Length: 246
Image 1 (cartoon, rainbow, N blue to C red):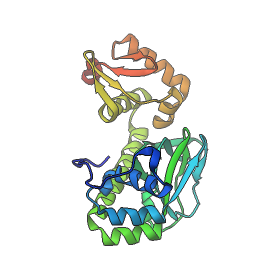
Image 2 (cartoon, one colour; image 1 turned 120 degrees about the vertical axis):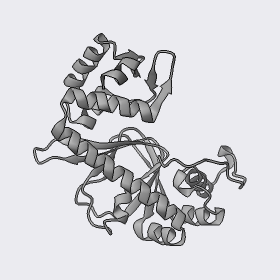
Image 3 (cartoon, rainbow, N blue to C red; image 1 turned 135 degrees about the vertical axis):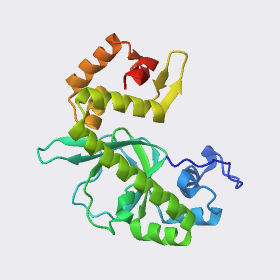
Image 4 (cartoon, one colour; image 1 turned 90 degrees about the vertical axis):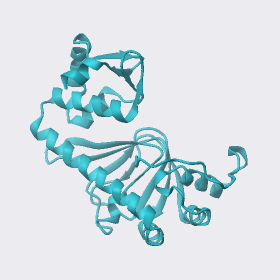
């Protein structure tokens, strides 16, 4: 997420029970940090030209080679962004949770085909906005454009770092680094350490560092035996000793 101070919008927004579909889209746009302090009339226009979708778990939103014609705003659910290696292995580049925006690389690639794929990890609700309409919106709102470009830069750096890790780090080192990263992004402090407040399976952890599920299970058990982590109700508690070992 882009670190900006969040303040309640002054506009009175209808309650959940009374919202029309257009008001529902508008309400979720106000929850996106990139639209912080954007005028109500401009967000209402964006809501009008966006398309709302509910997609089941396992849906493919785009594949490598598909034209990058839309920007996606995630209202609810989780998305996996991944690439297929030359050996046919799926390498996860990012796991995204609502609220966030994705498909933003279409803005700098000028609508060229996607190089990655996006799929839903659970039932997902999102808004689609055509690249042309979103570019028109950004041209009128340079402050939003700046936030989007920062997001693009952050995600490109994350991809570069991930590819470097695959080359220079062992699977065990990559898993330790990933757990520390997840603790930083999704952590909740407890008396013992930092609880990763994220629903993520061993298979998904493996996808993130290009490792198999059995390898992840074995390493997590090893980390537990070394008192680096604890597993509590399928969530991982990162202990201070893991910080020292990193």
